[in-house]
Amino acid sequence: MLSRAREGSSTSAAVVGKVRSILASKRLTLYRVSQQSVALYGPSSPFFLPHHLYYDLRSGPFRPSIHQIFALSRISGYRVADWLRVFGFDLEDITRLQIELPSRRTIVLDTSLTDPNEWISWLRNRPLGEPIPSITPLARLLELGPRRRIASVSQLDRHFIYAKVGVEDAFAFPDLAPGSIVRVNPDVTADLPAGQNSGISDRLFLLEHSKGFCCCRIRILDGGVIVPFDNGLSYGQVELHCPQEARLWGAVDLEFRPLPGEEPKVPKDLARHWKPQLLPSHEDFGQLLKRTRTRMNLSIREAAAKSRIVAELLRDDRYETAPSSLSDYELRNLPPRDFHKIITLCSIYGVQFESVMKRMRIDIAEAGTEHMPDRYLFSAEPAVASKRRDVQTVGTGFVEKMLRESEGIPLFLRDSLGYFAGSARVSLDDFFWVGGDDDPLHPYLADGLLAMVNRRRKTPFHFAAKPWWQQPLYIVLMREGVYVACSCSVENGVLVIHPYSRHFHRSAEYRLHQDTEVVGQIVAIAQRFS
Image 1: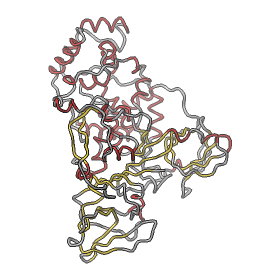
Image 2: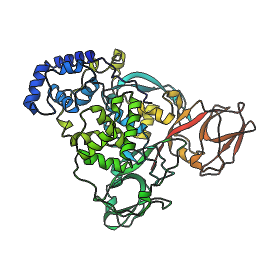
Image 3: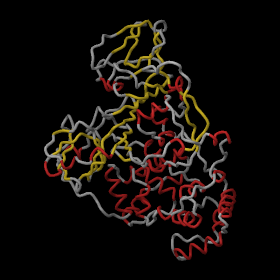
Image 4: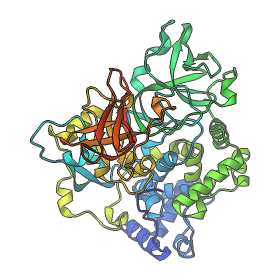
């Protein structure tokens, strides 16, 4: 389930009062706004705002269309995202749903929707007085501080690209697993297409072709030709010309991996040799939906079934979309008026919100850019003491160390932690720093940064017939107060640690509840790629 409480429960009368107050703050009335919409777009345009808008809002579940909300933004000067929130929509739902929903194919997440003006709980350093241990609870190093705006914590660097690895993307397995969220650095690929027979790349890349996205190593041939590479040769060996038939988005440098990961599948259409097509340069709304749905390997009925999941997660039946409607959107090139459907389409097809807006002839760059005052957007404003800390701090504590190690803050994940934990209840106590272990007992820990732990799973299991990537990992507390991350099992009351490391380690045995305690099972890990 989505972990953040939703703000869209206002009554129709309350929405009318809020809209009237917002317009009054700009010395506008609905009549003047209606007249300006006529002057800008004409009375028969979808951007037209009728003078009876308040009556429509009071009459029931009516909400303005995205065209009308864009017109309100342009006339008032306030951002489209803020007006959407006034009417009960949160654009960040799109990113969270793209993460939450099961996906057969790899998709690029729309992380540009994170609101820099939103207030979040932020962290501050605890006084430690000693060197940071190699593995330690994050709550020992950090504590929750006053709420701060996202913009004061991070400038929301748009440089990195984030993608979710699909179940049918087995190119990089087991280095990457289905369901993982990967960060992609676009700077690494600048000179690759010009290479000549440079062999197989050491780095993993996010690659786009006519059948979708995949994360893989690549073989570079003459003339800007690349071939996606997989260790098992399970996929058809297809030569792709850059940039006509393929696009390299960048190199994978960070992974947020759910554990234990599931095994991917190789789809039939990619296992056989297939003929690459040119990447599209221009397409309308219907063509965009059909292409992205096909890339996701979804039928119309399967897409409609995913829309029902969206409606359940957001607790609103208006997000559900019938198969006939989905078909009409594609074949008749008619975008839906209801903005609930726009959120659903972006979520289930993995399409970027701005791309949809462009196909609907809405240029977000022409909308208002002013942040709406907090009193119109949030049920309660943060305390004054929090606002005094709304500045960027510089220091040498653990927060700064973690930021240097990760080179960025994926704040769009803050409301999707339940996706990795399998539970909506996630706290600071569930995280461990694992980035200082120089001799890890498992490959996932070699370049690890943070581990998320389910502290309710204290009975360790080890499966002798399974490979290392399917073995559960646990955090274990030794009697001397040292934490160990490892694969382990209980045999006759004895805890046995099973090493899967590059260096030789003997299996160690400890008396359970005397020499050691199991803290919990690692359910997710953040690790670097170099």
